[in-house]
Image 1 (cartoon, rainbow, N blue to C red):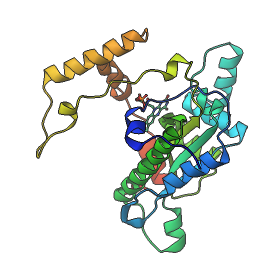
Image 2 (image 1 turned 90 degrees about the vertical axis):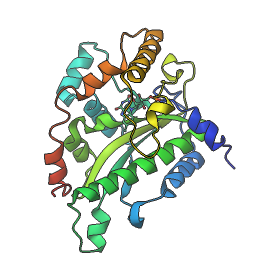
Image 3 (image 1 turned 180 degrees about the vertical axis):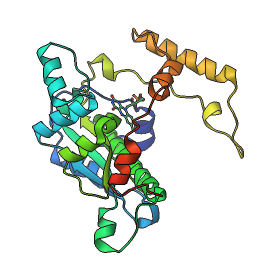
Image 4 (image 1 turned 30 degrees about the vertical axis):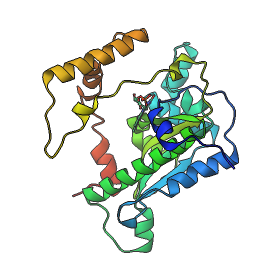
Length: 260
Ligand SMILES: Cc1cc2nc3c(=O)[nH]c(=O)nc-3n(C[C@H](O)[C@H](O)[C@H](O)COP(=O)(O)O)c2cc1C
């Protein structure tokens, strides 16, 4: 029987874990994590999520290259130049799971249209809930992990690497492993928005400028403690300030999603 932490303690202790000891995840643990994902609620009993375990080292490397936003050639060149490359945990984690919104089975079994935007939302929600169940289960077993949305930097290449058919799109990955708690990168919890900004009652409560600014200062102080000159406002601008993966709609439509 596996030992697991209580649910609330596990959830409140969450932090992303990006450095691992190298110890493999036992079959028992892996099965428990996958079963926790399988048991999750699913919209209209549609079960519109699939998981791919990426165990092939070459595929892991290719997916790391996608996360680094580099072609294979650019990646090799950067390695040869001795540059520090990110997302090493995609290769070094014990398990790398890729979560896909999946309407393939619905096509195979029933004559249906799944090109509505709503179907993609259903898939994305099912995927996110399943993935979070798995991460929470892993954390309750003393493991750690981090989601990998940078898989969508080149979503078409990621799909090719995983040989995905039409009606299946990869949304994000999940690295899992035994945490290296000695590593600073795993140690701190990132401050979240306070409850009075996060939660409204009955109607949406727009946050005051003061509340947003106070939270921004809290994030700045958190990063300062980690030796970084960064705040939440800057991070938002870095992510949403320019084009945001503008190829996405064309890709989704080529896979049979979000046409209307
Ligand atoms: C859908 C999703 C995608 C993410 N993608 C990445 C990623 O590509 N690389 C990474 O290092 N972290 C990624 N993260 C982790 C977030 O950066 C992290 O959850 C956030 O900064 C809060 O930190 P915490 O999880 O330690 O509390 C992702 C998280 C989510 C939920």
